[in-house]
Image (cartoon, rainbow, N blue to C red):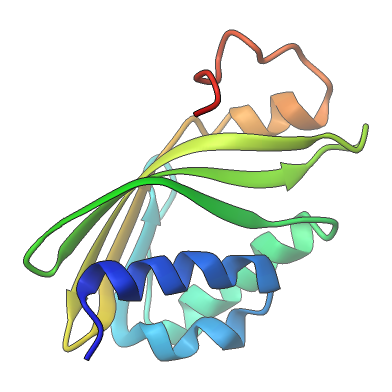
Amino acid sequence: MSTPIEVVRQFCDLMSKRDAEVLRPFVAEDATYQNVGMAAVSGADDILKNLAAQFGAYPDSYAYETVNIAAVGETVLTERLDYIRTPAGDLAGIPVMGTFVLKDGRISRWTDYWDTGLPKKFMTGEDTSSLVPAQY
């Protein structure tokens, strides 16, 4: 049986495949996903549609790098860099703090906290060097 940290690490590692259906086994049918500042999405089907749209918005890349991960019981906290490729070809890492709550070994609540304006700045070539933490 996988630990909550192992489940979340596997889920995050699979983001690089950019295939929402690969993620389905990790998401509870009644799960809720929210990027803070945006409307929550509930239900596995709608969460996977949302992820598929995100993958489509960044067709040249999409990957999560887990910088730090910790758990208490079924709650897993992640510090990540979520990567997208800019029009200039640079790979840009968006700092994200995520909370994953598992139930019966599947993600039942996933909440990400990040600067929702940062991708637009990356995509328009704005200097973001003072907005992103130093690389680890």
